[in-house]
Image 1 (cartoon, rainbow, N blue to C red):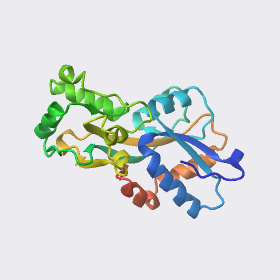
Image 2 (tube, rainbow, N blue to C red; image 1 turned 180 degrees about the vertical axis):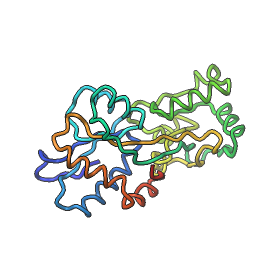
Image 3 (cartoon, rainbow, N blue to C red; image 1 turned 90 degrees about the vertical axis):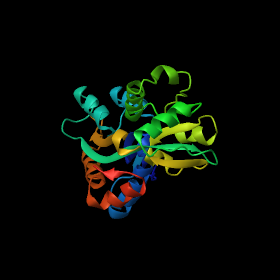
Length: 238
């Protein structure tokens, strides 16, 4: 996901988790229209754990977009500028099955629990929503029952892709990551009683070569002008 120019050496460089890949693409395009003289922006989207590891290893990035708790850990470790964190979007978890497969009821917590118990295989991401789902399964008393059925999505590989291929019967992932996947049926978001909401934030890396340009782009992403792009990608402004 990039907007490159002939002067790529001066491009603003960032890294993000996969969950914000599409909304960032929209926001980069919108920012380029609004600020044509601003530096080009290139943001690499990878698994969130990998992104945090690379920032922690001082790989040169101008900005990072990750779940807010991951940003806080990077700030505590001295890897992003203190006070530079800006919350951008909130994103909830949705469920999907392969296109044409039976569609389980997910209208209540009890219904989702039954769908999980019935599924021959299921998958969720390695990010914060996956950690919260694992805790939910433990609370339901299903952790041991599900251990052999869970297919762990490799970092950076969308759960929706596994569902579309038929490798997983029931998939849980950020709504934004399931919206545009071919070959799946989006069942809808988790019920409110068990919805898992993640706040994604941006911050300026301590390795930034263009901190002011990064700050300007982050301010745009948090502005009202960015609201339509966020909603279009299944997210809410933070």
